[in-house]
Length: 139
Image (cartoon, rainbow, N blue to C red; front, top):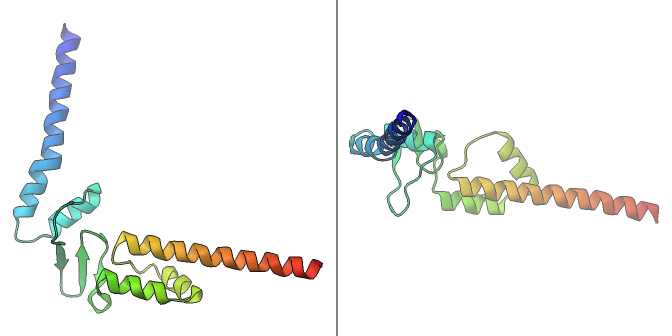
């Protein structure tokens, strides 16, 4: 009987904590005029709002952070994610590798994944061409 009561108390406490962490704290942070706390909270817990068409950003004058990138981006480098995607699409393998090596954050995760896949394709093509040269030399 005592064990059952302890389990019930633990479960009720866990449910209340989940409710606070997932509902009450984000609602409080979202109601604040300064959205930085809300963005950092979402980035820390990996929670992203779905269904909202408005992307929340915070600009401190020199850097900008948004919900998608979860990284501080210099204002001089800030551009829409679609524009960055087009730039990545037009880059050569050397440019992509150089851009990726700088560890400069991408505007969103999709652009980062796209750049990494293009770099992977570049590496595959290089490996294939090296192998093909060896085969040609062998013949």
